[in-house]
Image (cartoon, rainbow, N blue to C red):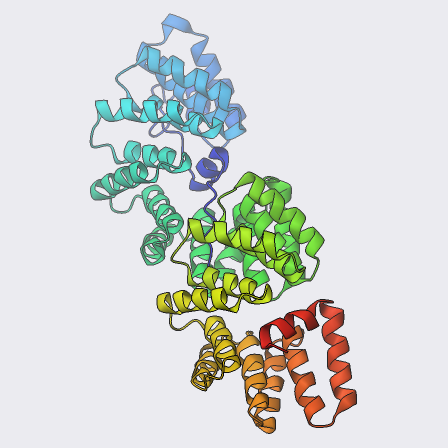
Length: 485
């Protein structure tokens, strides 16, 4: 399962994590002064700005430390209003007045993150850590800035240090969990995200990130529960929308998938993960022109996306464009040489192009890497039996045992192999099982057509052939290339 490794835009990251721009508890240097009461409260940003502005207008009549607090509190209010530029200005003024105070440094660092100025943010967090080397908040926030910038090892160093000082630091737990997710360490990601959600069950980012981890580990029901919960809190979050869209796509709920992926791309039009997921969806819905449009754009944005290369190769293959299909698959395998599924895909491309020798070589490599790969076993079964090697039937049997519930191919392949041996009744049973798993699998329809034709059911065979042709006009050619007919 492929990760959405896209880093969130800085504003979305900081807002989702609830990075409160720090001034400590709002200052109440003059508790009976109504301006200070307004400046210190956090519920109403406009009221806070009015109160702090009134205090700052007093100039030297207020002590320097009080003016620094007023600038910091007003900066927090600017952030709450979404005015990051004004926040940076006020935090900077507070730092000039009180350079030994870490709170405005942390606040300005967070404001820089919201503006996407990550290097400046890291400089402020580092300055805060020079003042207070054991400040877990500064470590967690600097780790988050490194994560958003894609500096994953630096982010892990900071998150680990923050969690040694403060094991229940939610920002560090979520950030480290997300880095583990992107790096493919899914069990470690789930441990951190579970811990974060025990501390803060309503954190939308943690829910969305854990939802994607569940998806990649095949726990679609748990993934959907987390993603639904996240989107109930933040309905326009493009990360959660595209992750839920991918869950729906893999579960065959194509209309729901398309709605989520379209919504995600409305929020982030240039997101390569969402484009690839929607391209794969269009391919599944047999809209290959739209699939190619999305996949071409995804690869323009992310030329090294193995997932997009694989899906575009599949589109080219179904349309009979073997050279571009092989070019995409060759590139994908060069990027990820140990991926058994890619080798199986390329074996299919070689077979359809008429090169059974190269197909066999790819299959042997794929099954050496993953002996329990049902699609590869089914294809090797066909090649072995075409060559007169009866041991191939063991591959078909094993493929049928391992195949996921919606995978028709191993049973369709075994149906043809059994038919070739004269076992008509078991062949028909396999063809029916293949179509029970996927009623629109054109190769399964053609396998059943051959079984029906051999049994004298010409009308049934013709109906299956016509149905396969409607699904894919090249289905008969593909079938003939695979089964050697």
